Length: 191
Image (cartoon, rainbow, N blue to C red; front, top):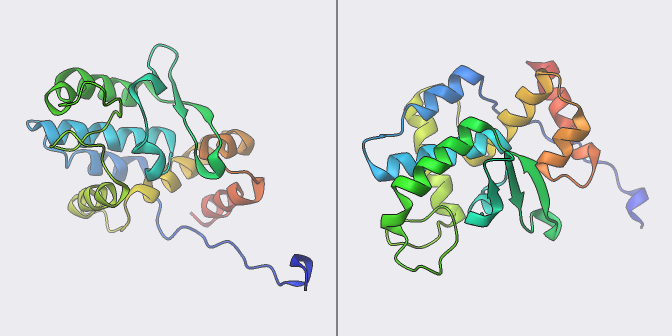
């Protein structure tokens, strides 16, 4: 049987999407008196601003960010494709604060160019990132569950509701097919 003979499995809607105020409540959980809190705030801001996948975020290098132009280069996203996407000024400012004020104390190896580092100077891994982000979402007590992908869904849905063209959202998310992105039109309608 060919793929044409198989029944189409409908794409599942995201279970949860944050409102802008709920996202702010999650951001507020970061303890900004601690270096780890500043790093985590920068991570949350990047996830919310760009909608990149956690696997993409853990591979961002210092040279991939261009705050002046407001862009982020995502190297070898899903499908091993690179894409250039916008990053909001607020997210870029948090990354700058982290890179200037926190990262130097974590970067034991001067050859390490990964932006987000753990307390021992190692690049963060995706599982750790999910755990950290999930704890902030839970602590915010917004009545929703999720972690990194929750911010991806939130970014796409809020952009669509704000009038962004679906093809622009498709590019930001790194979807090969517009069909994958169209799920957000159904989320927006549902809300």
